[in-house]
Length: 303
Image 1 (cartoon, one colour):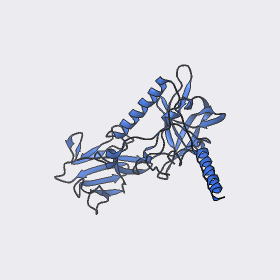
Image 2 (spheres, one colour):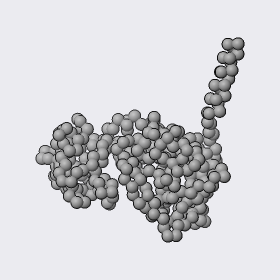
Image 3 (spheres, one colour):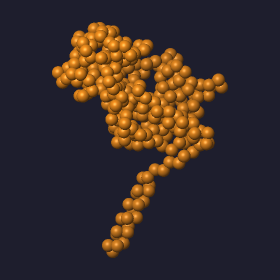
Image 4 (cartoon, helix red, strand yellow):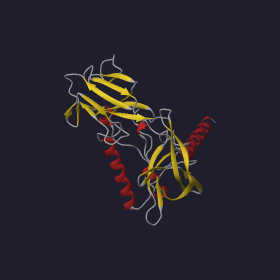
């Protein structure tokens, strides 16, 4: 009796395991699979570059007036210990202008030239000012009416330990032909970010497609000749990053065709570092399906 019961329990557990297990197979022409693999390799290379996301080492919001910065704990902005002098200098935030004054004898450079005092361009302006000391690089970012210092460390531990990002097998079924559905007039949407701020954007068209009999409608942001899509789906917080993923799609070609390729869906910077400021999917971009394509969660992932 006990052996029969044990056998039944083992069989039931196996059935549950295999029924819950999901298998995904690679599908697509050799040329298409080669294209997506190349895209993924370039994605990894870009993450590792000096202006990539893996070397972020700090994000410090400035208060109005003077902000002393350096590695000393008494500063307003405290850089990582052992990476720079105790006092590097002072940032001054006045209205929308940020200036910096460097302490005498501290060799901070900008474009290879030593800096003593300088007005700093932020990341919303052309050619933002990047300052350098040793392995550290920093510049000013603007988010809403807030100004902050984004710090990079070219010797970042994450940069050294990072290898790759797990992905679903490439599947050409997730390269989906879509069409535009115009908004007349343009639709104003709310785009929240991970800081709790909410931006507004005007959307001229929705992207509409059908997958497995389900009609999906996404509001994209326009960036030049591309659409930028911030989306979540039923894998979010499970197999993929909890705060959604990003995706670019080319605008319609000369024949009027538009494709959304979820094999190129990728994790936002916030999945790698707490020092990024990521937009979150608008409510209407939460898809009622599992998008089993593109990047999965990095490491243990953030929910």
